[in-house]
Image 1 (cartoon, helix red, strand yellow):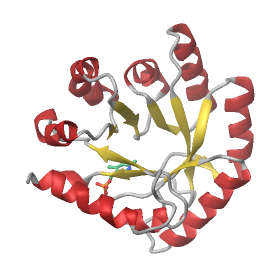
Image 2 (tube, rainbow, N blue to C red):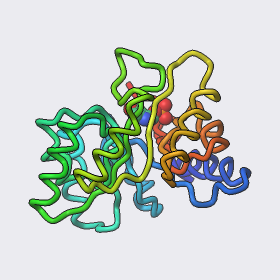
Image 3 (cartoon, rainbow, N blue to C red):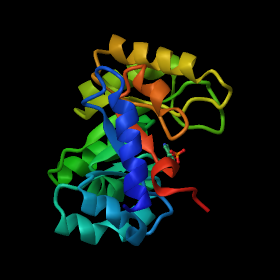
Length: 216
Ligand SMILES: *Cc1c(COP(=O)(O)O)cnc(C)c1O
């Protein structure tokens, strides 16, 4: 069997061991990898893929998305508002909604092309300057802006926790904030911490290297 499919199946069986994990979605993060490298997983029937750059996603996925209409593409990287227009056209989900300006452009674009995509609000859990995201205390107001003013379909919160061995604590706090807003979906968990994420009610796991191998 193809090594990518083997790794993918292993992750699925790990997740299955946790009660209540049935509805969780694995987003296979394919950034930096060629379509040729990803293809075995597409042929295997997996539908959800993650990319972090608009340009790369456009050149890699435009053609195959026309051929395979049920493929779902997730934007998981920092999105500048000047690239948001193109992003709304290519992606089905944006996990990195993190400013009013970006929300404005996304809303305007999706209305103009009659497309409704799904969003996660990115939260900067450790207030790290090198990471984007809305700070914890401002999430409530920003969520209300996106839903009330912009009518965006916000599925839940998303975060990349600080790399300081407190992952469990960060995941617990974002999970509680997510629930307090009445949100049903939560985008947390990567190759190194997806089991911790599942234990904290993650519904969307963004897993790259554990499926596709190390990125160069
Ligand atoms: C690259 C990336 C991932 C996947 O990381 P792995 O450690 O390879 O699983 C997940 N989320 C975001 C936002 C990423 O940029």
